[in-house]
Image (cartoon, rainbow, N blue to C red):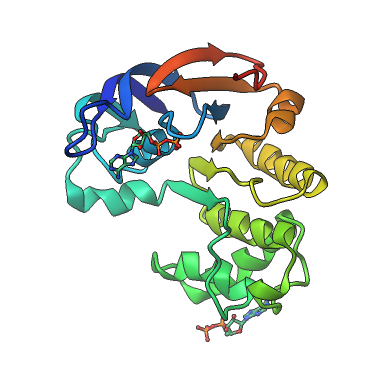
Length: 228
Ligand code: ADP
Ligand code: ADP
């Protein structure tokens, strides 16, 4: 599903690489934690997969395409195969739960009939059945993150990318969010999650990739957080 081939990324004007000589593969349906201190390169790793940047060197294959050479006009098509979840939820202000999720389908031109069927199904899947009419800002943090996950997943992406999705949530709420991501992963969706949440990583025991100063220093199956 994803293959890094000697990927290096320099930001313009920087003398040290944000990522250096990364080689790894992530298969369809894997659940991968990305750990490492602030500045170790986690966001850069995710943003390369999203094709927000191109690698400075090397090849990066995502869903069969080499992002190093992919034409810019094909980027929207690539992104439709990915869902994205953030630490700060990023719901649309002033919109209902239903509208937040429906919007993700409207922007890619899905017919209203399909939207009216799929959105309630997806809200049920994430545990928000009956909350479609609530405004995003009226909800608890955990519920807002469920809306964000529903929005990211409603188009059934191949890859779900989560950047610190439990970073603003208390431990109990975080466990609920992880159960949901686990359920999504069981539908063969590849999940890549950057996190500083040691207890979550230690409970889930999934593959762990650790970055340090832009280098991959650990690739551990059924791993632990274990970073200094
Ligand atoms: P993390 O997500 O692990 O905190 P990042 O990928 O954001 O790490 O950062 C990796 C390195 O790249 C850091 O040294 C950071 O300062 C640098 N960096 C990140 N974004 C930019 C940018 N837009 N321009 C220049 N340097 C950047
Ligand atoms: P359209 O008029 O474009 O066909 P819809 O009939 O899907 O749009 O929806 C009209 C409005 O009703 C939208 O603002 C939508 O958010 C809301 N809506 C539709 N279905 C539901 C639902 N099951 N729960 C909550 N709100 C809904």
